Length: 181
Image 1 (spheres, one colour):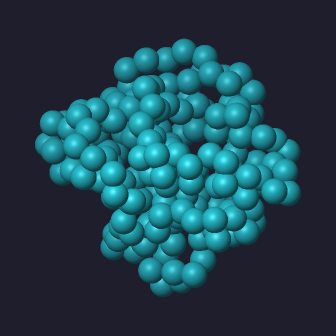
Image 2 (image 1 turned 120 degrees about the vertical axis):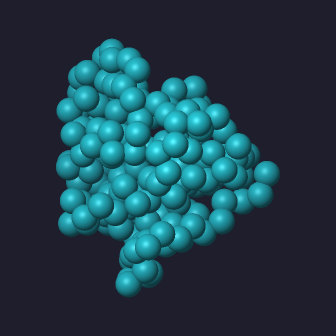
């Protein structure tokens, strides 16, 4: 499978992650408001080499195998600055994830980034179903799912950086996505 391309939205450039992004990720990522609702596999406190280790040992090898697609999020107005990350994963019940630096939240940027990678999931990768797990307390993420036509299909408990809490699973089919567009 081909490497993921750069994707563009009205305000954003989504650039495939590279090892050179480690320093910028290390600066933007290890904030409680960013990580508290992420999977408990994320180490906390975040180690000084956390971003480099994640890129080198997890994200980049999975991208090379064609199992995951990870993009840095950058504003077109400041393309040199990484402000977050959006990802697609070929895993059961876990197909999309994201984080955004705190100062860029509430501007609709993640909705824009999510829409671009969701289009890639359905159109380029030819998938028929997108499922997204999240902490129920993550209201920002829930709003993105609601705004983009996803529906809640299951609730249970999950382990997050912030501890054990209610987890939701949201989904949308390709056909539903096409109708939402």
